[in-house]
Length: 353
Image 1 (cartoon, helix red, strand yellow):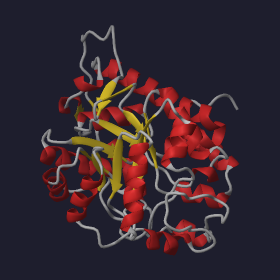
Image 2 (tube, rainbow, N blue to C red; image 1 turned 180 degrees about the horizontal axis):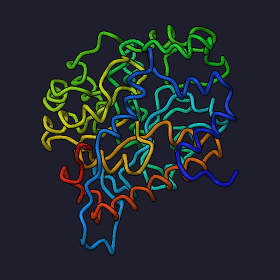
Image 3 (cartoon, rainbow, N blue to C red; image 1 turned 135 degrees about the horizontal axis):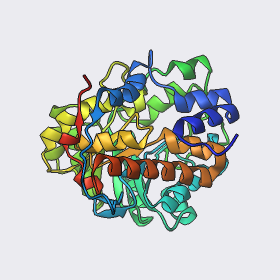
Image 4 (tube, rainbow, N blue to C red; image 1 turned 90 degrees about the vertical axis):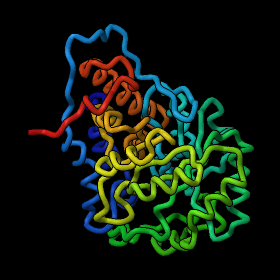
């Protein structure tokens, strides 16, 4: 077929090329996958309200997130085990993100250490996604390694005290290959039930007090990923984080949790400009990005979308998917009557009907 025109077409091509077990791992969610579906459906519960006769002769998609100048309000979310998608894995995704002018977040469950990623994609901007290990000494070393490798933020995932029940993986008996490197873990997860093994990696006893300990380890800004309520948003602000990501882990943890976009307004209202608010989950189109901006997100993170590009065409596929999203954002801004992401306001969205 001709070059894919959108994220959905990249997903269909990726399904044709991936092993069914790996595709199910990347695509799937927890339980009945209700939250997974809601993440996408939530964007259809808002309509755009374009304004006419606005000067849009010059429109930019550029924005800043934590003082970094980005080509668009779209960052690449941390996605685990990317060498199952393409032999070049995270290195290719990071280079694609750099070519598209945005941030790449390296997962703890990656095949590269922070130093290896920095060497593989030296032109990129990188954040390190952290699972707090039961081995606090190892966690401390990981945070230090990210700082030494030039990463610009720590993205602490807080919604995985245990792994959600992902029935696609259980049905497929999905396992991590023994030969897949996982240098950011204190022990390898290969050769057994992935669900049980992942639960052994994270520390279910961490609390907000541990956030203070984490902050004492590094001068890097800390962004907390996995916030869905105003109560936790307030606690995050009180503990001095630089940002929060409104996220339900791509629908892969607690099935029945709110869609990220549905939770976004209350988090934005609570944070009230104190910290940067980002959104993760369900973004498939540039119009989704614009709706998230209108509801108060500074930018969004996308995980599955660039991953499908990685499967289809490695680094170039990642770059092209991100460029497609940027082009869609630019068109959306223009037709909405906004010259920049910062010009989008709550008045630019409404409920249908």
